[in-house]
Image 1: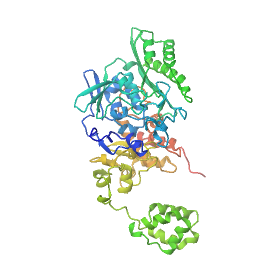
Image 2: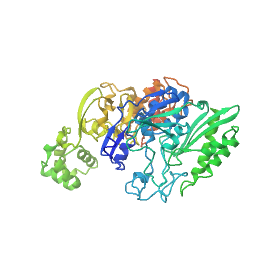
Image 3: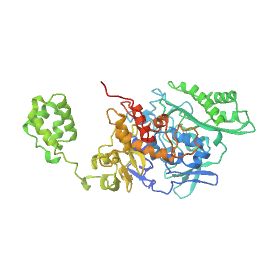
Image 4: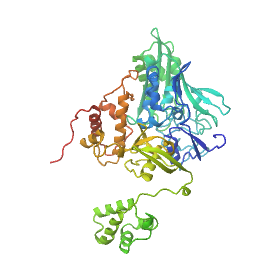
Length: 310
Length: 260
């Protein structure tokens, strides 16, 4: 159906799509409700855990195995939206959220993401909430999901059903895209593809992980900066550091430089600070969001400290 | 309401022409409705009807005969869908436009106007209802997706004249001022009780890995878990007290007194 009608859209929880339709940002002429599909299971898999695409965010965050083995993910989901919205929103839909850039939402304003070629009003406009990494001269929007920031840190992958009936796996780093010259493309899904599940490999981070989120109000607000952190510690040294940032880029921002620096180091405050500084050295803030650079650096340090403490 | 078309008396017409000229055309073409009535009440309380007493009297009498909106005519809907679902224990079969939200269906088609339309964009929580036991936003739910489901609104919480304990607690603790967000707050709080009983975690729950049922929520936990319901009047401390009392089953001291 998605291939037959290029103006059709899939309906999950509707918490983002219906809002976008009311604002005339999305204008599908047909909605296909996929909540009846058998994709709602959260179950153990051969590699770790499989989160069904239509499982609700609430059920995912509260699943006993997720809470026990992937507490960072529970925490990230619970940091997002409100109880009502988490009861409605699906896992697949969470990954496909559109940016909350106010110019994207305002159809009277130019926006390359909504209307390719119309320009970017945020570039010289109100860009306090916008990107400090990976933006292009076409788009400076940030990606809004909290859940996805944890999934990035957890090295998840997205399982996708293709129109020919075959499944393919997309590594999480490759799922969401930077804006580049095509900011209208949020992710690497092709027309006619359907997310069936999110796969998370087993890890040893549960005792040493954290999710922190800084926002304009204490609850029910999008992140200025968030960070998901996990530390794998062996014999007093960091075997692997998992760090992803939210609220700073067009996709969950894997802190590759900080992760690389920390590998093999002792988990000390000084090393955490150095790693955070190295990551933030390449940040390119806009006119109104310079504060995010220091904020993100501090968040990385704080996140690592919390993860270490467990 | 179509019965009222063009049937305004000269006095009524004069009242509209003088005091609500922008409404006259609408009244003549589609009748006198609840909104006109509310506007009229506003004028009455500000003393502006003094010079139009006869017209006002006739209009107030007319208000008593305001009918519920009749069933939609299937041919008049572009993409009508019959939805069978349960609302406050009553089985309903409603014909809706496929684009209609649950909120509009409850308010405009079933006549349950307790659920409020605040922002209509999922940001305020005034439209919160309980679907299959879980609190959701009816403004972002399509009625067409409710087939076979069970919906509870603020109208369905009391048992006859006996208030739901949460409603009683909101009254006792004055958990509102203007009252517009209250139906959503109460529905949200009722569902929150179930979540706490099941042991659902929140963002501020200390150790996510520690899984217990039957949680007794602190003030901070209640605030975090109720953050999806905005109260413009700022009655939050009283709302927290009300929920705390209903949840604990123990008396929580009222923090307000009558003046004088």
